[in-house]
Length: 219
Image (tube, one colour):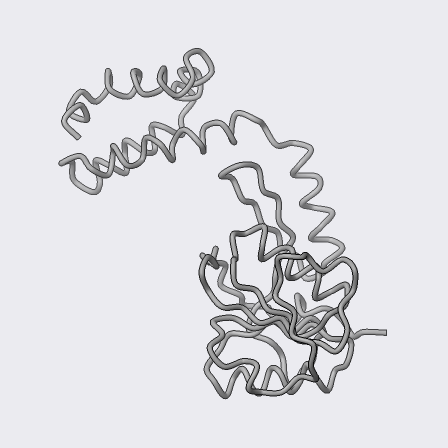
């Protein structure tokens, strides 16, 4: 049986959403845990994921590069991010040590007080441009909270996030001050903006925004 998950070993974690596109990522392991890590990376846009293991489970995504070999430190060369996801604590420990020796951030799937990883992967809910993550000290509790949030998720949030992605460039290109631009973006998260989006779609929201801020016509 594996020890307690790493979530409990990151009591002072700093949350961040990392762009993993075009980053070389190494997952050591070929079982169900490694497959889950690889799948999550691919869903987040990763295009260069490599798994190192002697055997690979059927659940491992086909887009992942497979290296059929016993783990060795050289397999971490050139990596930007590392995942230690085997069912052997001594191998995971070696992966963590080797990653730290190369100043690489590493996630360890099993917990260890002496050789812990640097970050945990929280439970995640993705709806279009909206990404909600939950870390609660227990993977089971994190997933339960995420699922409850999913039940309460409003589709209009997803629609607004997509619309704001289109309109944000127009706001950023304006000659307004940073604070003025921030205020405009705050208005886009308000109830009037939601109503404009529901009534007229993205173009209706754009017209609403330009009526309030005609100076954006020059952006």
